[in-house]
Image 1 (cartoon, rainbow, N blue to C red):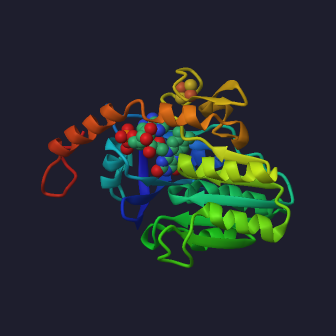
Image 2 (spheres, rainbow, N blue to C red):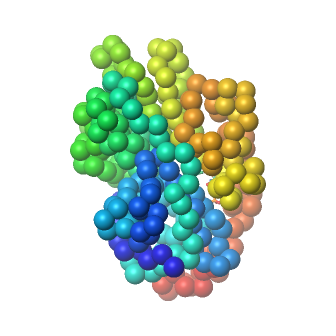
Length: 285
Ligand SMILES: Cc1cc2nc3c(=O)[nH]c(=O)nc-3n(C[C@H](O)[C@H](O)[C@H](O)COP(=O)(O)OP(=O)(O)OC[C@H]3O[C@@H](n4cnc5c(N)ncnc54)[C@H](O)[C@@H]3O)c2cc1C
Ligand code: FES
């Protein structure tokens, strides 16, 4: 069992868990992920390693409640345990001194961008962080990203904090202001990553994205996570999750990401009906 040592609510339906997992913490690198299962009959879900502490033996994950399992996870408290916690999985981010790098995080994507930005800065890059959220109350880790980057720019879609606009508006300004960007990393919702890639392609800036395709085993055996990159079939769990953004078939990804929508809707409905009404989180399987 893996104990939740710390829980923080970062924003509505957005949680941070620090989980005791010394063997994973000893090996985890930026860009990797874990797969967890809350209990015996639970669904396996992948979450990115948002931070790790080798000395304390902890892994930090930040997750958004979107469906049944992430809602079940959101109900857990400090001191509760998760049955399975497997990792680190996936190919770590390729870290080298590229020169000037833009690290773009949208929504919950700010969490996975954070360890990569920190590693890139440590490798000697000038790291320009760009983070955005729909509105002020959904923005988190501004302080951690400021520390991880050389320079940080913040935006909100509705203008409720710092400025109004999408991360792509800020990225365009940065590209035009700085003249040269050697690499762009973008992590966030699919439409955001696609928009970043459309923009950077025009400027010929190499762009890396992290793909949240549907995953089951996370070890290259089931084929659920397949994505097409530069015309070739890849498995996001073992070949990724980071890929050349300009080669990703985003239309195919978008189609595949909704294939279980009806089953996901039904699972939430059944979960809601089985929940204990006293607010304890009981009765939910
Ligand atoms: C490598 C990777 C890293 C991820 N990191 C994070 C993270 O750090 N924080 C975070 O909030 N989310 C992350 N996700 C997405 C997270 O796994 C899904 O939100 C979660 O599985 C949803 O499960 P659910 O039962 O709550 O929702 P569901 O109702 O089952 O699904 C809601 C949405 O989640 C997607 N989803 C459902 N099951 C899976 C699955 N097994 N694999 C991938 N996507 C799924 C569906 O396509 C759908 O769009 C990551 C996904 C991958 C593949
Ligand atoms: S999740 Fe099964 S092959 Fe990638």
